[in-house]
Image 1 (cartoon, helix red, strand yellow):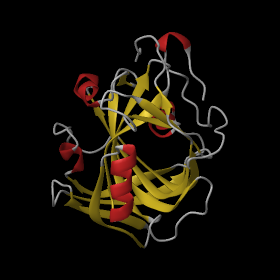
Image 2 (image 1 turned 30 degrees about the vertical axis):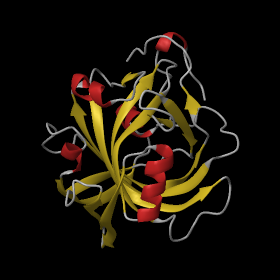
Image 3 (image 1 turned 120 degrees about the horizontal axis):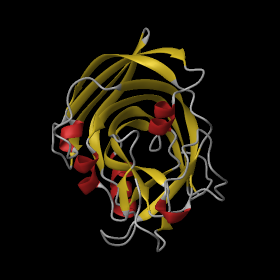
Image 4 (image 1 turned 45 degrees about the horizontal axis):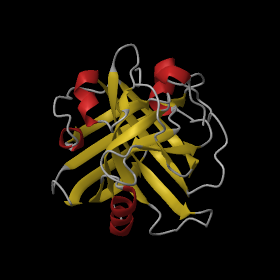
Length: 260
């Protein structure tokens, strides 16, 4: 994956920045809705992994609420699992950059409807997965995503999102690329709480559509540590989805202080 010197963020690119090698995980992300709100970078900074700072666009940080269908998760190049590897998911995400300039997603929560994948992801990758009762329902020209938490909670925390996808975007804006073109995630996947790793991913360029937000009743963002986010999102997008491959985690190398 490409990086830059002096902690400057690598350029935003709609295409993967480089080859991945043998994948650790394969999966498909289908029927995604991207809802985003602007937030103060100072509010986001304490919620990020060590060695990263908020990744900003024109001075603003962003929180994303992204419901979708996970499809056929597979390990080490093996075929994806049809049942355990396929389930609805909704994540609350932030954006960060590290000292090597690598832009990435930081997950504050990931609700999913399969208990075994939730338990494995929490135990092996230290990802904040939550087992939830979830549905993704298409009705006419709309898609509805519902979620109610079971374990570990807060039990009963819920969301209901309905979008109406529109025409495909021929040329996404710089902001739309910034919010969706992310080629890795930051976290403490292995080791202690202060051991930062970067998990790279590659997939084809996003097919993005503008979308109308029909309904949004959600408690997930506040439960993820951002209770001050309110009002309608500043960006609503839809994508039919992409196949995705994840590489092996790369630990943080010694480097300069990140520059947002």
